Amino acid sequence: IHMKRILIDMTHITPDKLYASLSIYIFRILDAIPVTERKNFVLLVPSELEDFTQQRYPDYSYILFPASRKHVSNNKLIRITRQIQVYKKIVNSSNCDILFIANDLYPYTYIKTSLKKIVVIHDLKVIKENPRSLVEKITRFANFHFYRNFMKHAEIIVAISNYTKQDILELYPTIQPSKIKVIYNSVLLAKDSTSPFRTSVPPNYLLYVNTLQPHKNIITLLKAFNLIKEKIDHQIVIVGKETPYWKEKVVPYIQENQLEQRIIHLQNLSEEDLKYLYEHAQLFISPSLREGFGYTPIEAAICKCPVICSTCEALPDTTQNKLIYYHPPQDTKALGDAIMHTLQNPPSARQLNQISADYTNTYSCSKQVQDFMFLFQNC
Image (tube, rainbow, N blue to C red; front, side, top):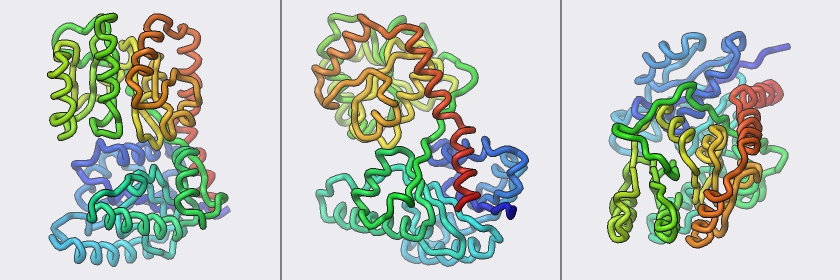
């Protein structure tokens, strides 16, 4: 049997993006590929990532992509044109059979090459948002056509959830359903845990871990907490990098309602810190409005923490309807009631252990890689 050679596109990973979710997605796949199979894989990496690749992935051969840096040209159009030329030439001369692209919205990746392409679609939120300004409408139009060509030139489209698959079929009805395969993301937690608290650990806390953007809906959590704050003695630990939305909308709400003493905001945590928070929280809450997969409620549940989450988008699918849910996602009273009820009637240790075991099995890195290896060999 001819073993296919797979070229893995890593051109989106730059030194400042090593901890971005798309980078971690690729790293988990590479880490889980059996050592005996690695000779069949070639990594396409940006020039500035050569040292990192040599150190972390000595078992893989690699090709450098020298056109990723912005100084190729400050003019975006010239830069994209140059990147397309270089990318096509490198890919076509790579002696590989399949090009695997797990990133999206990089203009040079949509082009047709001599290799068969397998592409991953994580979500289509950039074309689902309602554009308001003319610039937003033009951007949405461009993104819509990018995805259309990106998927048209692919042999197989991988969706990270059934929800994402349905999104693709609704937005691009000409795509054959048989062309889309669902392979769930893997979820991997640190082996050890360390406390991120510099002083004493809060005895009782609710936990939120997500980006501090409007569509992750932290404001509903804070409003729900404000309704029940007199009935409970818990604090809320919020994990997420500061954003303009956090500073301009969320912090003023916290101050207006005198919640400062009940809120602990943490950012730039290690994976070990995060695991500690999951393991010691009384309750994890995910009030998100947009979720193509939803890592954090699954991570919390694997750590045997009770979880309340909204029923938005992919969450009922990826969490397998095994958690505690409330809806609609912006209903502060519904969330407040769910928090009170869960604190008074927590799931049993047996239930939490079973959910943890189910998720650990479903979202293991080895299972994800087995699914991909099957696709690669049968493409």
